[in-house]
Length: 132
Length: 80
Image (cartoon, rainbow over all chains, first blue to last red; front, side, top):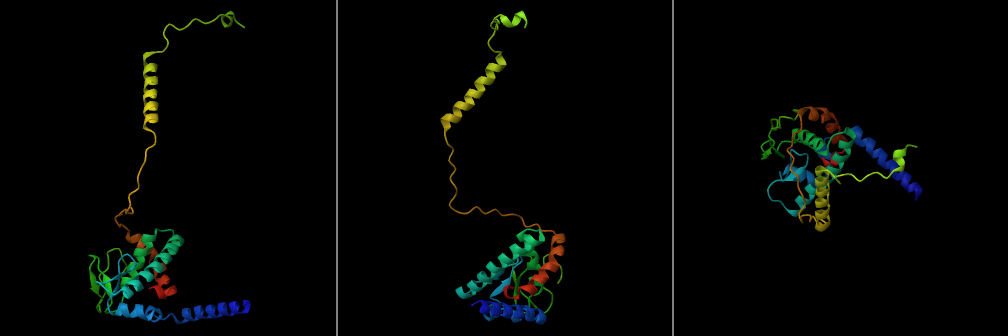
């Protein structure tokens, strides 16, 4: 039992190191269902740092977005505390960078609140956001 | 010990000044109304209270956090 646990930890540690070493683009690490919903423009990046469902989508797509949003919120809360900022400040900054890093064909929320499809050029970013 | 201490002091000509009487009357009115009023019950609304704050986050904050946020994506790729 104890040995198994140690083995599992070692494996996890190894995986974490491998993950860092590879530092593959985020797309490769995403859940396939989530990745395909993004690529299909069903789920987009919002300015507030969370995912949004574009138009009306199936319950399964809605669930993918809300599940990730819960995890994001938890992550933002922890990071905000570490940085001594509010959750919203951290989340909005994350939103800036996530929109800047959207891939061509993915949806993102423009400063006017509308959904836009990322083209080959830079996205429309809020004036407070850095360009990359 | 002085002789004054031994004698019973005379009652004051006037019990209380006008101002003091007014003050006491005021206190009694407040006290009376508080007792008569009893408890004040406040009912909470059924729906949650949503406070809409104007999002006014400065560029300075965003720029300061940008590096940490980029690192966060690399550390937690599965949620981004």
